[in-house]
Amino acid sequence: MPMSMCGRCKRLYSLGSRCEPCAKARARMREKARVRPSPAERGYNAEYRRNRRIVLAGNPLCSLCNLRPAGTADHIVPLSRGGTNNLSNLRPACGPCNYSRGNRTA
Ligand SMILES: [Zn+2]
Ligand SMILES: [Zn+2]
Image (cartoon, rainbow, N blue to C red; front, side, top):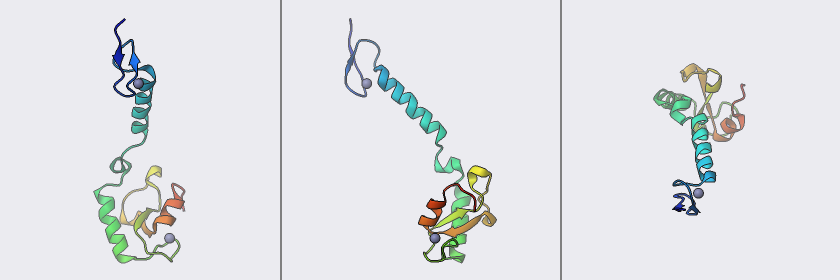
C-alpha cells in the first residue's frame, strides 16, 4: 500500500496527503477563524480609530476609574450589542477598566 507523509505532523499515513486528526484540527481552526472575526470586522475600523483619537485628546483620564490615563476608547453600547463607533458611543477608558468590563453594558 502506498504511504504518504502528513504535511503537518510528519507521520506516515496510507491514504491521502494528511492524516485524519490533522484534517480535523484544520477544520476546527477554520471554524474558529470564522466565528472570531478580525478587529476590522468587529467594527474597530478607521472610524473607531479616528474617534478614539478625538475622545482621548479631549479626555486624558479614564472615565470609569478617573485614576489612570485613558489609552483606549470604550464602547458605551458594545459593538456586539449593536453599538456604533460614533463619538456619542465612545468614552475614554484605561486598559484595565476597558478589558475588565468586557462585553457587559454599563
Ligand atoms: Zn498529521
Ligand atoms: Zn480606568
